[in-house]
Image 1 (spheres, rainbow, N blue to C red):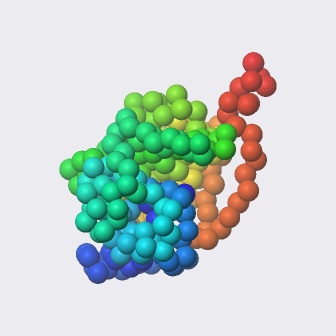
Image 2: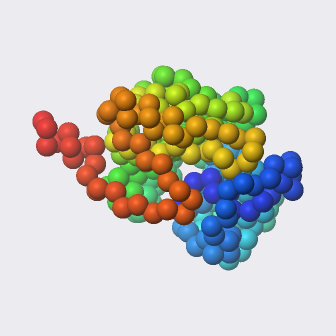
Length: 230
């Protein structure tokens, strides 16, 4: 599964945004079951990569809100492989549950979504691009996410590092990962400040990854911890 992968340099072609982060995998090598996009901006909906992924891996299913659904079809992906996920809607099979939740990316992407994902007994929250609203993240707490992945570049209507740290605390997640920074010169972002803020609060552990880094986390969910302390 991938969430909003940006695999190419389509941003430079479309809008002149030069990519600064390395490209770690070619679209034709991305063999996944679920390809999920939160909104139609090119650094989330990779116009150049998506048709290649669809062609090379026939089992891949594609998910996104209405605007993304329409674009999937325009790019030549068969309708039966495309699943519309607007806010409040979900997809579920024997392996995974994907639920679309509120994200506030303003008029730039009015149907943008965040994502709740449950798989193999674990739960992940992915904010997508969103401004900070305390009530939004308090609602995420009900899902009891183990990991929260939060946009923190502080530009284009997104949370900054301090807001992202506050959002992580509100979700009740055990781990929090900053994302959506340094991809382009225009993005900016202070992931170090995000981590420092969470370390000061002490209830949610920050994780900051290098591009391509893999970590194995302790498989001990929030729900299991609650049972042990009850």
